[in-house]
Image (tube, rainbow over all chains, first blue to last red; front, side, top):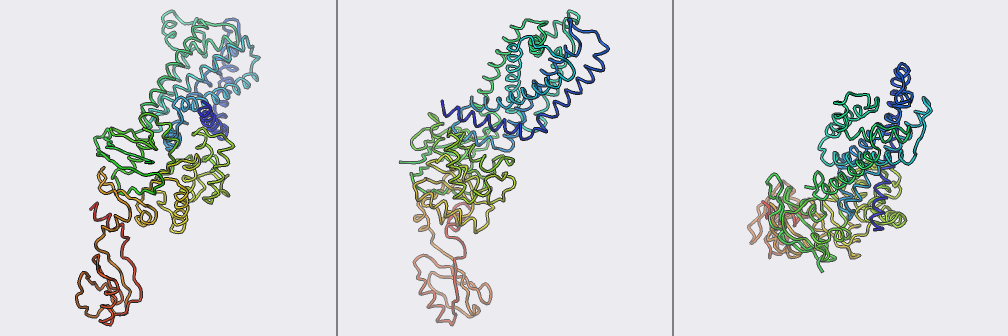
Length: 255
Length: 301
């Protein structure tokens, strides 16, 4: 077990070092993008709108924007790091060693979590320039932030395992994650939607993550927070198991 | 004890290509074993299976008695591999690459740092330890891969074309290093295209062709099979008529170069005497091709 922990520390350290070594590529762009969201949607457009559920529009969208950056960066980090490791063939360094598959998965995912939470923290700091954001429950906020980044890092790893070329690592973020995030209640409360669209929206898992995270800040939620947490734990277990299965089968990494 | 034992190993790729057609071979502990064969013969596939990068279709592989199907992790601890292609992150520093590899084997930072220092010094890379891998020359990159393959002190070191693209001086330095390692008891398996390298280093050689082992013998036994050898003689005047000599054929290449193909059993002294009788003085001589190369070409052609 101690050997496995050393392996895990080695991969996690390598992944984390990479994030901070190329911080101009990994940390700065999402912070700039989110700052623009705060300026355009929060200050310019938000000032024209009435509040939602008793909060200023800027305060309402801030948790959603932070969560959006956590989701995108956790996913992107793992998919790009795993794919480039595969592309450069240095995944072989791990494969020829006795490193267990669960350690490889957790090692890469830890990088995604570190980047997701780092960007989330930086975006939270930026949001304070624009709005005094309340913090209703630090425990709920932290749980949702951690579990969401964990789930999306695991999803990114699956994408990285299947990816054969660089195009393959941007298809899912562009055509699946971004639309689901935008339609996941970042900019609006789903209680404002007609019944039919509320029902459709509830099939989008990201809405539970954003809603639960927002609850941690504002203390208001459209959905059950416990359902959101349960869903995150369920997705974490399923995606982790899929990753282990894929590595065991050697899909995309062994011939 | 066998360091490596392979029984009826087969690999069929999804494309239908039969890369290995039932390979069987044993490598004894402490041996310097050469696995030779033309491109696409199955050498790298064999190494891939031993190191888990390729999934076998059938057959059995044991490393120091450990069946890879039963406990691959334990078997992997015994193996160090130096692949043909550079497969480290070019953006990382030399010492990080080597220490990380130790970490993948569960070796703590202090021990990893000590082992890394030992091999980087031995391979002349210690001064470059804080250099990123992309700044290294081709020869340095090859040596880095050897240091990385050794950092966890494996009992069996597998080298897949370790000196490809390395200049002669550096290659000889690497040969000395590998010979020292082997003398200290480390089992080494080498694939190479340089037959001179195999002849110098390996005590036992297997030749693989079309996914089958077509020869597996000690170097001494293998070289005994060579029944003819061609020597290039630098002479004063090769244009003189030379009477035939039993078991020897002569070919004048130019005015000062003569080739003598000598069948096993014929004495070199008689050849020199024969040439002397015809007024041909020999200044120097060398073997036309590497002896192992002649055997190899005869087998795979």
